[in-house]
Length: 130
Image (cartoon, rainbow, N blue to C red):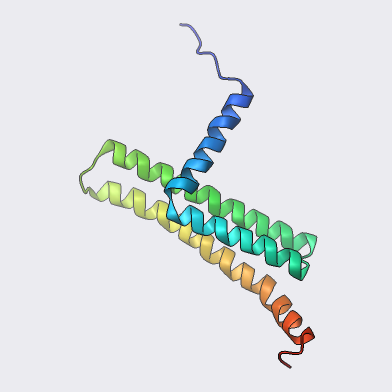
């Protein structure tokens, strides 16, 4: 049996980036997560996040984006297998979406814990409150 030749590493990275771009182009939630990430980077820069806070934000965004891509892949495979409404197809799609939701909620809560004190401090420094 002849072994199949693997594509060069450069090509495999190309496939991976194509998957990310496809997710952003085709999935509304990926665009929402991307916009949120851009806002966090902007406000994190303005408010001066610590290295630890940056790491927390980056890991959580990576987790949410990765799970969103896995969710997209699960949905695509289920749709490829069947167009009918089947209980197992529903379980696959719903649990994949649930994984994204849990990660997104935890990212949002963590973001509030990190950002709210900094925002209040910033607003107080401007003399708007307090």
